[in-house]
Length: 175
Ligand SMILES: [Zn+2]
Image (cartoon, rainbow, N blue to C red; front, side, top):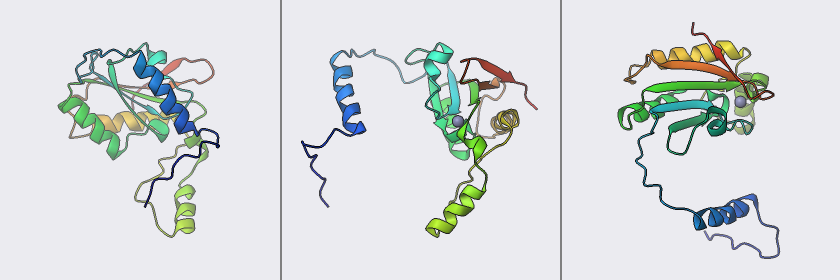
């Protein structure tokens, strides 16, 4: 196997653009000398949605928090894995969960998984974790964090829905 050499005639791929942007970033970069432990001892679990700029939306600075993102901002086993490491190895105590309006998962059902299986001949080991009710899914996510035996800190867990049209967070009361 050989790595294809980029054709100088072809337009740069988006990855090429990102690598070029990194070059500029590194040119102006100075080592902030930070520790890996988040300064504000908080882990934020959020949807991967491209419209959600977590740091700006929450007034966070570099080094302040852990951000754990996936489709939907759902608390899956892998999110529990990251939260466990975040708390036990890197000292975070608070958990903030963020779903958002107009989420792509609102339009999916578990049929997605079934159709995928029919197409590729293999059933994915993961659930789609789609939802119809944002608030209910936030409450479920809060509950999954609060009942995880692996986490050290389960008292400061709050969940929100971010409105992609206003930029505002709305808190969801736990179950
Ligand atoms: Zn989303």
